Length: 479
RNA sequence: CGGGGUGUAGCUCAGCUGGCAGAGCGCUUGGUUCGGGACCAAGAGGCCGUGUGUUCAAGUCACAUCACUCCGACCA
Image (cartoon, rainbow, N blue to C red; front, side, top):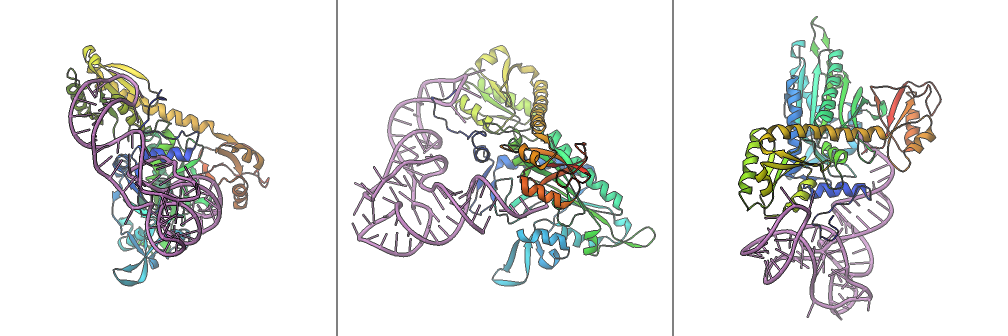
């Protein structure tokens, strides 16, 4: 359409270079900027607004289910981190250490929190003494630091923002229920609000969280067929409680160890949104978390009261609870169309002199560019309906991508063939032996994603060793 | 951490066998425009990533270093 025009902003097409396409969107939709601190990004207002919307939604969910927010220290003394063996082994290679306070060398190194299990455990040891003190359902919104070697904006940065829930319970059953209840909330957040279909399941022992007894996950598929672990929920049993000497007197005055969980989602989800819904014109945002749901673009705005009308519409839409923005800048309409497509705004409302004569306006959907003429006096109902339809449509598109890129395999050869040329999810049976899982990873390059709750029977035997299969597992290349 | 690529204006980049720092877009001001990235005119804007070396002379050559990026390895 614009071959003869000088495009101000252009992005690499995802078919040409998916990684560059991703980076282009991050920069040109003004989501993030690089900083002089390697591996750390500036989360710009537009991306932060998306994160705030995610926070608002999920915070509401956990408050409703009895959770409370707290703030924990940013530093963990080395001795505290050392208390749980598996946990420290898992995290030690990627923690940042503080060794000086002012000009003085510290007697004990301080770790910048990579996750806060140890701090929560120490605190729980202080405050939990009786079954009457349980449960504690705590959460914190904060940033954590992991010294990653390879970094990419949102997907893997040395500092990232997240929520970490840490709960402690009287019984195993209660803690197990909490772990799965939270996983359901993640599924709800992802599917209903972020329009991202997920595969819900349990991690294999090899892939589970350091220190956890069981790790559950919701795995999403990106446009390129790679997996993004989008939320995890861990059941700890009483392992941490024993390591940190958390004990309580139960109903029979017997000293017991409580059972714990932890769970988290992070700003990585923003990367997931980009790679699930975005296209070659830029971002496409799910309406529930879009900072701007409707952008109003006036056409010939200095003529015939156009600008006044546009301002009036903005006011009306805002009053109806719609996140609307009028762009009254001096850019041409065409420029604005492209700009807000880049930013993924779900609906564009065009209003010009012709529309005003007719008492209507033009609504354009970001996902398919479909134009609808809409009477001005029905906007308050038409727009929420369209936003709802929009959410369903992009969910369906993502769901189709997921379903079209899962294949069954009965042998290592079939697994290798399945991902030749393009990343995919591969469903295969597994005997449960970690050795076979390792062989699959070595030979195909795919780690296991999860053991889905929705099991299918593909065959009777493990494709590696031929022994009886215990589970169907989804394998895939991940971010 | 290993291998490749790139660092020059806000952005994308040109700058040959060393010899005055360049273009397009963006930005500012004024005007005409406005239904898919408008046009005219006048401006502003540079420690050539950083450091050391070679040279009469370095954006250009050498070495080092830092950052970004891709591919591996690693990674809740």
